[in-house]
Length: 340
Image (cartoon, rainbow, N blue to C red):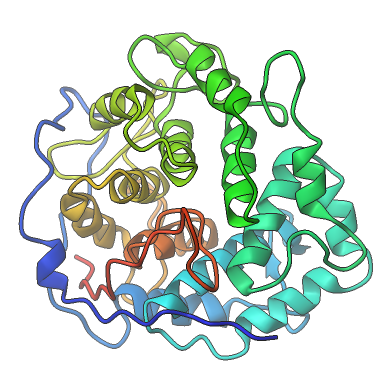
């Protein structure tokens, strides 16, 4: 399998010149990790995270899910993460190829893609990141499933706005046009505070930073970076970022976490905003062995947090493709930050 990756060796100083302004949140719950100092060593930063991630790969090429068994969804997340690391100059060996072979084995890809539009979209994004054809892979056409997955009445792809964002990103990664009806659907489901919720309810109390961050990336990738939708979405997203640069999902009882911080950083990068404080704070969630933990209440190595953190550290908002195309942002650079 051929993969062409752009190697960009950026200096961390370029990303750490200033902090995100106007993003303080009063009363953020729970302790937050101290921002990491610039620096780096062999087991920290992007390289350390990628190396730890590779070490978690099974002999079958898959990564384990919540059930403790080989999981196609988590494997796709890992492919996207490792592809972003490679584009930023980190050698991941045969890990991506091995993961793709797992997805192509038996009926893994077929069953996963047919389980929902969001799953078909995520598979399409993973294949595009690995340099595979999302329109034709292992007896399944995930991109076609995405195209046919739009509700004629609501304009929404899949079962909610997160699925919808993934579908828009998959269409862009596959070289297809995102229909105006998909953008209109986001206008209809955006809450007054600028955010989006997972289930599409346009209510301030129903929105979350994760869905909003994904939607912002989808809007930018589809050529709507200058829309009021993005501007309002960024205004809301800034309210979920603390003065220390960490983000939380804005749901009741939430504590700042690495996944929300990483997604917010990708949205800031996509929108052309300063993500340096978020990226610096994200490194505070990294353990010495390279893995990331979820939040300060549980600092154990977390595979799901690590696959989410790697693309942000690599400076790559979604979609990530093997050969950069329209809508695919150029990596900001290779980041080495020492975890606190």
